[in-house]
Image (tube, rainbow, N blue to C red; front, side):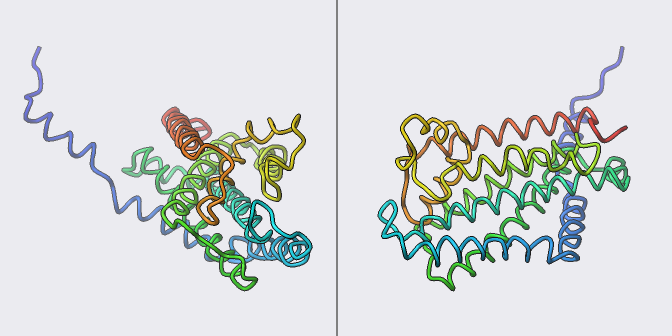
Length: 271
């Protein structure tokens, strides 16, 4: 029984490990172009929503509150408002992208293209980060008009924007593969993401909660996301500094492996 020469095997390894940059950029460009065709839905809507939160809670309610955590109320709530919009933008982008690929049947083009599953996932996540970064930048500009923008650590700020975008981008991809109709796309957002984000410390500190309810914050992943972004912006921290970052990276790794597994099994793609 003949075996393939070692030198021929070694010649194939770089090809398998190389990245199809053209295919990857095609995925990213297609999704960015799709976003730019619906700017009101993709960008203007979250900016207006954030403007209402900033105006009511920061400009109207804020002056009636002296300080919270040693900071102006607008400065305190802005990271929470920003994180809610980052989460929503990431989740909506990935769910719609994956679901419409299945619904319109053009996911078959990606499946027959010389793209690995990792490249397909990376292309989707790149579009997610583009949308969340654009959303975040627009909200910062709006908040600057009200004098509520501070960023004490730009690298940490970028870390939380990218990591949380990745987590909810991957979660949205899993939901997009699972959903059979438009209603199912919103189930996780309505029953889990929105409620958990509101009780994750957007408008209050953990100390403001009754002692018997503080476990809701410590057991809520959104608390660590908001707390991390808040620390990067105003230096205020309520949790052990490395804890939130470690938990977030673990979540990102687990979801990455899970979504890659779903793609490799063809779950929701080859029906």
